[in-house]
Length: 125
Image (cartoon, rainbow, N blue to C red; front, side, top):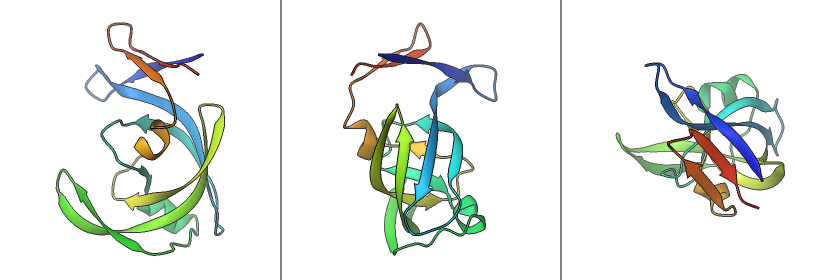
């Protein structure tokens, strides 16, 4: 079992759990390493599009993605994600958000306990 504390958001209150993660592009380019938002409401993992472009990632297509702000085409990248002491090969979406997201295409493989009062997240095996 591994516990991760929530980070304090820009308004001085905990926003959501984050974890350290590495996104390694399958088709070349530099890896993304950093704190990554754990988002149970996100269908898939997300990488900042600006990072993917600067790091030389090669997209293998576009997909129309529906978000809270509407539907738009976004680039799709194949990556190996290292997070929660494991690895997964998945597709991720390039987004205008300035941060990466771990979504349900990874979270659905895990049992996770979000303890809001204690501001902790725990992977249960």
